[in-house]
Image 1 (spheres, one colour):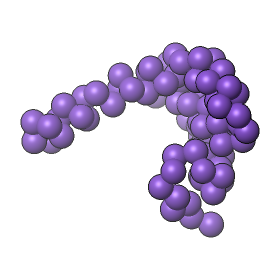
Image 2: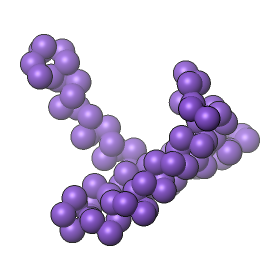
Image 3: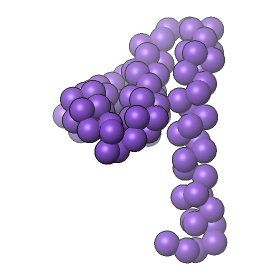
Length: 92
């Protein structure tokens, strides 16, 4: 089943996030020397974060997860800033 939910942490997206986590664990982790250890580690953590937030039932639990996974969230945000800058300037 393909996830089409617009809400990032909707339960219907859990299968998608689990597939991403499996990809990072099974495909990229063995290749992390070539791909980059930091990249693989942080992206795997981000997948774990997404899955756990989908399962969290309270705002407090979600906040604790954000704090716990802050390094992975910040890494993801920082690596996306280049894409935002290119989009704004129209460069590809």
